[in-house]
Image (cartoon, rainbow, N blue to C red):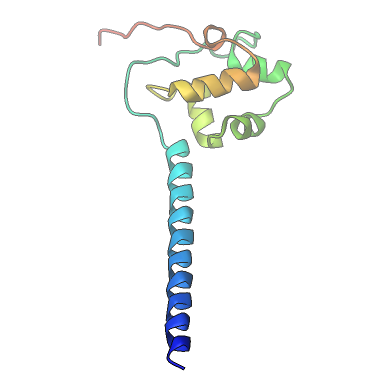
Amino acid sequence: MSEKPITQRIKDRLAAYTAMLRDIDNQLERLDRMEMTMASPPGPDLTGMPRGSGTPSDRTGMMVERKMSLNELASRVGISNVNLSKIKNNKVTAIRFSTLAAICEALECEAGDILEFQKESAD
């Protein structure tokens, strides 16, 4: 009779450990999602893209040419629509190479096709 309480205590402990592992996995997934959507740290301006030309050399033109919406591109790249819009509108100071590589892969282009160097103004 003394075996049953010990067995039950072991089962209860295993269930508690399993629940803790599930919580840890959920927290890790949330952290991964947060990391993907967070803005890049400040750095040199690498995102100076031409605006409004409508040519396939800019990202908007490439999206139009490929009949891809901003939502679809954001989904393929794995970042939020807001962050992709900021990149597209030159409102960020840096971009992660992994994000740039994912954008290039989704648009089937090279980084040089969507980036343009702009000297910092001496203001």
